[in-house]
Length: 315
Image (cartoon, rainbow, N blue to C red; front, side, top):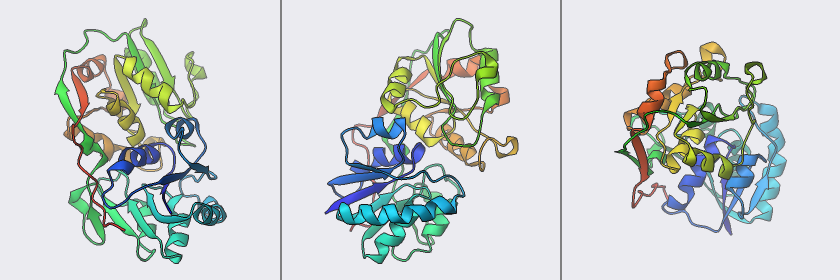
C-alpha cells in the first residue's frame, strides 16, 4: 500500500515535494501524480510518477476527464492515503478516494494567506477530507493549522554585491497569462553587461530582442539561481521556494489581476508574507529599481537545522 502525492506543477508541486518527508503521521512508500513538464520530470527523477492531463484554472472539463486517470492510478498503485497541495487536479482523486474509504489530506497552498482557494472551497464539500491551512490566522471552520512550507528557512545577513553581474529571471509558467511589464522594467535597470537567464513561460519576449526559455528543468533552473548574483521572480510559491532552497533571497514582483497578469491577486499575499518573514523583497513592477536587486544580495537564506514537522491528523 502506498501514499499518493497529487499536485499541479509549479508552486503546488514544489510545495508538496518540500513537505512530503516532513508530514507527521503520513509515511511512504510514495508515488506521485502530476502533469508532464520539464519541472516535474527533473524534480521527480527516480520517483514513481503517473502523468495526468493538464488542468488549468477554472477548467471543469479537464477535471472531469481526469476521473478516469485517477481511478486507474488509485487501483494500480494500491493507494491507502492521498496528500495534495492542489490545485484542481486533486478533486477527482479525493472524490474517488473518499468513496473508497481512503485517508485524504488537503494542504492549502502557501499562496493563500487570507483564506482558501476555489479548489479548497470545493474540497470542503467532499466528506472526510482532512484540510489544513499554512496560516494560523485563518484556521478554524474545518481548517487546521499544520505548519508552513516557509518554516524551513531563515534569513541571515550577508556581505552583498556592489553591482549585478548575473541574474536569473523567472516569469512563471502558468498558462494563458503574460508578464511583459516585468521584462520591460528589468531591461531598463539591469546593467547592459549583466548575464541574464530568462525563464519566460507564456510571455513572448521576442519583441524585446532577448532570448528566453519557456520552461527549464528544475535542476538546471536551481543551479543557475545558485550561481547568480540575484533572482527576480513573479511572486509564485514555486519560484520563491526554488530561490530559497539555494540560499537566495529573491526579489518578488506580484502579477496583478487588473493588468490581466493572473486569475486573481494571490501573488500579492505571497510576496507580503515572505517579505514579512525577511525571506524576500516585495516590489511592484513599476517601482523596481537596481537598488532593490542590490538590497536582495545583502541577505542569504539558510535551511533550519531541524525543520518542524507538518502536523497532520494522522491516518
